[in-house]
Amino acid sequence: MTGVSFTVHAAEGAARTGVLTLGRGAVRTPAFMPVGTAGTVKAMYVDQVRDLGADIILGNTYHLMLRPGAERVAALGGLHAFSRWQGPILTDSGGFQVMSLAGLRKLDKDGVTFKSHVDGSMHRLTPARSVEIQTLLDSDIVMQLDECVRLPTDRANIERAMRLSLDWAERSKAAFGTQPGKAIFGIVQGGDDKALRIESAEALAAMDFPGLAVGGLAVGEPQAVMLDMIETVVPHLPAGKPRYLMGVGTPDDLVESVARGIDMFDCVMPTRAGRHGLAYSRFGKINLKNARHAEDPRPLDEASACPAARDYSRAYLHHLTRANEILGMMLLSWVNLAYYQELMAGMRAAIAAGRFADFRAEVREGWARGDLPAL
Image (cartoon, rainbow, N blue to C red; front, side):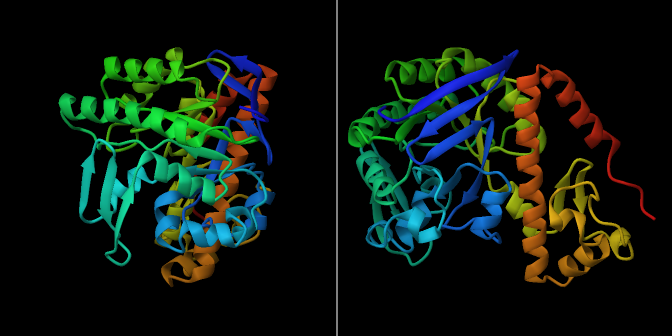
């Protein structure tokens, strides 16, 4: 694709670090993309997200097409101008949300007709329409429309969805055409079936997408199954193109997936957890709802570069969480996104220095050791 490139700068085992270059800027990999579902990373200012080190964020086609509408966003200058995020944006296709959120839905070989969960209005999403919406949003990385099935399910259903997604991949790529400085990614499907995953990966590789995603994981299966599928798929993906694991995950998921060759991630987990009183840190998870924090004057992590983790007491964060105060949600979302970006930066540096195995062990040791003891 014109104006799009991916360069691997260093590798250790399957783990690798590099740069994905797009028209709007460079994305350092491994990368975690904060999720801006409806044009905003929930409870965060756009400047905060940038200052934490995020090179790219994610927007959601399904939510934005329903409200405020892709055509309206386009008329207002596109999603970057609308949201004040000037770096690259990846938009998902909307397929997962149609399957999981929409009320009435009818799937056929050409697309899906569904009823909005917002106001009950009827909509039609096809591979071409999904790409059109993402183009109206002015997305830098467009995702093909696919069908994602929840696990566990029977093999026949997994195979049907995988083959439909391959057909939609071809249609999506044709609809995308050539957009300088922008890319479209195909999505590997196949559930928890190794043979179907390999078939999907090889077919998509032959279509010559500039990047490939692994979809349909973190949808109910154990982590061991997810990691097994990554190990199965990665050898069949082009080494010179970015690999994106969709909708994943916990800090442990990120580290283990990078160890298996994944370059890009997105997940609502850090902001969702923050809105519900849960902090992620080098000590593991800290539940600020717990009464043990009610009189604790210490910060979450005095060594953190994030002011929310370093400057506010656990007692205050506990109070805000128990009182359901908006500030508590904002501070803990900030804490969590800061930790996720610190973790990605740590992995990039470790791979570049040839010490990823040591870094992985040190991080896991910190989580296992756990939080500081209560006063």
